[in-house]
Amino acid sequence: MRMVDIIENKRDGRELTTEEIQFFVNGYTDGSIPDYQVSALLMGIYFQGMTEKERADLTMAMVESGDQIDLTKIEGIKVDKHSTGGVGDTTTLVLGPLVAALGVPVAKMSGRGLGHTGGTIDKLEAVEGFHVEIENDEFINLVNKNKIAVIGQSGNLTPADKKLYALRDVTSTVDSIPLIASSIMSKKIAAGADAIVLDVKTGAGAFMKTIDDSIALAKAMVNIGNNVGRNTMAVISDMSQPLGYAIGNALEIKEAIDTLKGEGPEDLTELCLTLGSHMVYLAKEASTLKEAREKLEAVIQNGKALEAFKVFLSSQGGDASVVDDPSRLPQAKYTFELEAKTDGYVSEMVADEIGTAAMLLGAGRATKESVIDLAVGLVLRKKIGDQVKKGDSIVTIYSNFENVEEVKEMLYENILISSEKVAAPTLVHCEITE
Ligand code: URA
Ligand code: CA
Image (cartoon, rainbow, N blue to C red; front, side):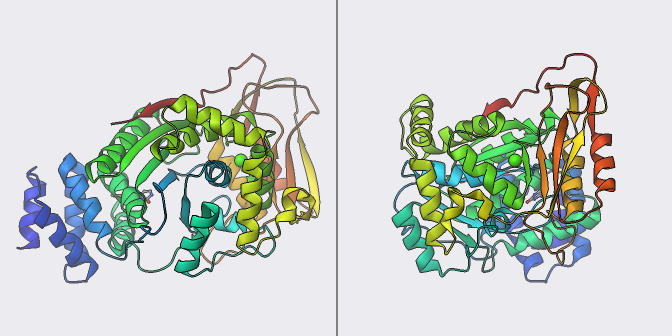
């Protein structure tokens, strides 16, 4: 087999065979096929697209390029949830203990990464003593015992995706739905998921800015999942404004605690109940979505979800007393209020720019070397559609710097107040199943 023929087949719009896809993925991973040929192929894919079969083949070739996590020793159906980006997205912190309280096994492998705030692991490390450096056996035992554990990304997972993603980044081929969908799905499948619930964000703070693009990406991922034997569905949810109120690491832990108590922001609670219902249903812990939702509401009401969070934290060395006393979480030295300059209604809260403001405070990493400040971030006091009076606080800024003028300026530029009444954005646009 020759790489030049594979490039030509794709260039001319012919479907690549399973063998051709495996050939280029393996050859690129082991270094026998050079960047320039793979670049040409990626550009071919960008223009010609990929059939359903090609997408499934590409995904599985990337899965098989490295280690696969074996979760077979965990009892039950392992349902993983994946959100495509977002700002202040606290759903993972809430959903883990929430569905675990119903017996759904949550075996989460998580990373740190770049972004407006840290990743799930960084957020959890705001709880003193909590650590994810655990052995595989202990991870499996913890999930069997408590139904939830988190382990740091380890081993050699989907090396083909890492190399291809880096190459796409410099050849202007990131923005291709088949390539994005197979990239995301390969990581979920290699991490051992039996079933997958996708939360595809749409709007300013999302990877996909329009509903149509978000739906196309969701369909592509749902197809791949189901074609390779993983029950997969997607929810398209709003990310035009940040989700919930808190954007920051310790601040989001506090928000997750509130939500698990039934006292969280309305949008975050609703999205967690929606995604959680699908997780519980796919795990076969409920026979209808309605029953799943009622069960989730019950474990919030009776305190079992909160208890699951405490057990989870303490089992991995964390100080679970933060749950009853969140003042034990890292605290910022200063707080400032961003006051409304006029009366009216909040009409826009541009999610990605507000996320960047949180990053400027130190809540997230701009580069791999950045050090995160777990205490700092933003708490929104208003959301789109809310009425404000001049002088009301719209955002509380938690900072370890005394001067936050640049952050305030950024927030004022990206939070608009209109004199006319504005409707709150739709939270869940639609659901995509096979
Ligand atoms: N996120 C991924 O993991 N892969 C992509 O290709 C795009 C976003
Ligand atoms: Ca939040």
